[in-house]
Length: 176
View 1 (tube, rainbow, N blue to C red):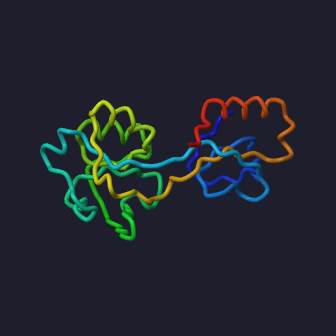
View 2 (cartoon, rainbow, N blue to C red):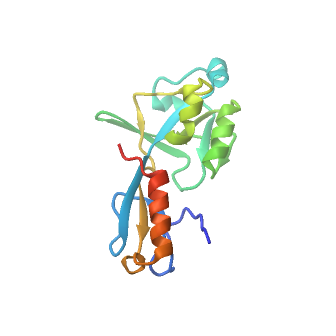
View 3 (cartoon, rainbow, N blue to C red):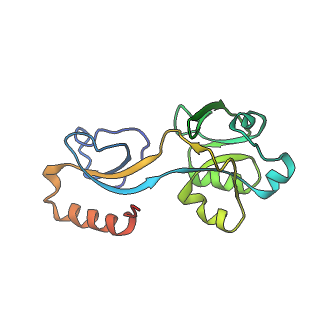
């Protein structure tokens, strides 16, 4: 059984065999294996940029239609860092979703500027179907950082769990 949930379920008390969580470090009492780094890219379609222009500073995002990821309470507040400078801006737009693929599709459909997980936006950026916006500013919101594979120490001996951990590490491990 697979459970996809953005909340921080307690793996031990909910008797979850295996979890993937974005966190600075694994919670106490769990074994953690690093998988990959999750980052975000601010981007827009060429047609959106041609019609509405490209912001030169994060504060200008308030004048744009922004596509909001609605999976957390920070959705309409975006924070950016550039060296010692940091900015938090309230954004709004005509579309929001809690699904990153839907946000990517909305961005490709010229609905606005979005913060999209970098791994999901990568191909569209390479194909020039999306352009990076404010590339010198790093988005510093929630849901980014190291993705960890988490499981309970007493379940590590389970052959099924071991096979699943090995499989996920072979498919998802990409620390650079």
